[in-house]
Image 1 (cartoon, rainbow over the protein chains, first blue to last red):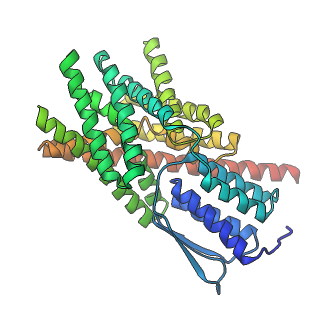
Image 2 (cartoon, helix red, strand yellow; image 1 turned 90 degrees about the vertical axis):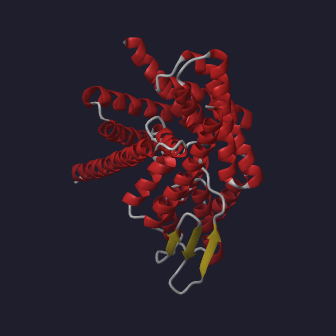
Image 3 (cartoon, helix red, strand yellow; image 1 turned 180 degrees about the vertical axis):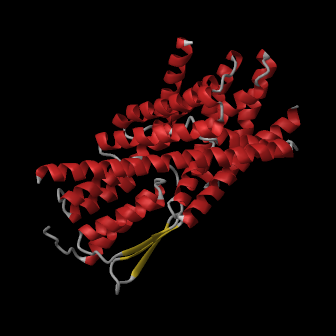
Length: 252
Length: 153
């Protein structure tokens, strides 16, 4: 192995930015720590230490080096960024690109726009709701209502979250709008499967993946991350349940 | 019967495919993620037909999704999380979690408690299935590497 020691500032910049992108994209804490450790080791610093929780990254390049801290304020799921960082890490490991090139590529990831536009995603969320209506054995009368409810609910969460940075309120509003649409549809077309229609329409915004990820992190020994992710999932489901429940209390 | 099976496969493929799209996955990885989701839902439904228990069937579904995800991950050189997260979407109890809170709001504490316990059990059994699949794949690839090294000698 031709292990070449790169200057400290570049290596720190690469490793911290890679960890930040991974954590903001919703990767498991275990994978973030592993990637950071491997990159720093490959660039010539095998004694590095890192500690990652779901809101903060701590990283020290060597035993006698300063500790650098990044705060992580936004978290969502962005699988494309995880894929790109993994690619860069693998190319760096094989020696296909230099450290400067890797730093340039990681910086472009941070600025790059999302690959799909919001209206396109809205339609996708509507179709997801229809598919879930079939998988949960719902009724034919609710197809239109679940499509509209799923699409509108998803877009309300996305737009309000990007405007206000408070996810709780966005989810309450989205859930109550979905429940209103389902109840109105039942008034128009009849049918007795209100519950299944609401569950299918709510499906694009519920935190199912978060719950499972939290328990997976707990199994792997990342106790703090597991607990905080579990709390986040609980709050999301409380928001959605309260939003639907209030509307159901008023109208039935 | 056959139509039901085909429709189930198509719709579970569709949900996993579209969820990979919602999570900004690259275009050429959408179809593999959909296939993983269809495999998981098929295993879950087969389990439901054989023993009729949510928790055990979720474990089987998680195991199949984990194994399929690791195979896809080796094939497409991408982290396994890109296939597992869209794949477990049809199984995860997000809807059940919402239902538990809704029952709390509607003053039905008895039903709410039962649903919460169900959420905890189902999600931990999926996570356990994924963990076991992870261990299995690690052991398998280590064994393969070991055998190749022995052949060279």
